[in-house]
Length: 298
Image 1 (cartoon, rainbow, N blue to C red):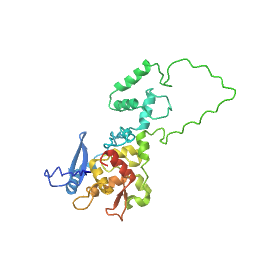
Image 2: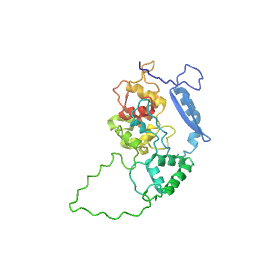
Image 3: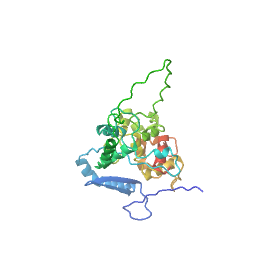
Image 4: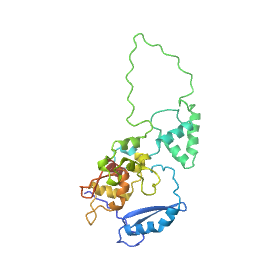
């Protein structure tokens, strides 16, 4: 017998077991990040009280956050289980080259030990980096070539009738600067057409300026990687996407819970597309189905 897990959030301000929340509001104060589940009315009240201060304050750009590790649902294939621990491949490759862990312009997917060392370095821990450098010294490798320091072999004589070399294997479909996570997500991603965008953002210039509409407000989604988009999926978002996909039952009123307050963000991330003739006005995209599956509730 299959089971359906329905997550219902309650208003934290009401402090009872009956008032359902419409959205999760996130904000920061004195370097501490907060989140609170509120009804639409209480959320508007919070924003109204903070409006005087946010309008007078300055927006401080944040350094792009690395995607949080993504886990697979139970029973996922071995191939999909590799889709974890997304990092910025360009930044990690540049860091590894700078510290002599790989040769300049070296192609291919970075090793897990290098990715772990890079993540640790971002947290201020240089221990893994020192271990990698020590391992290079112990094995007699040079950062430029990553090959043992042995004398070069003498040139081999070519046979009288040279045998043609087999054709080189094609490069993997993912670009050199993309890790496996990004390449796998790209298989499911298709940019929304103008007809699939909400009328407010159908214009290409408006669409390119869309943001995360929340704690990521200062960053344009156009500049995000696909794995960074997937990493923002919350349990509330997963519930919405599953209900639009018909996987999870609708709420007691026959609607999609939290859709009213979260539709803009999910649409900007291209998890849902504008469908005015559909029952709820929105439809889930293939990229949205993939995102909720990676989140673990699909």
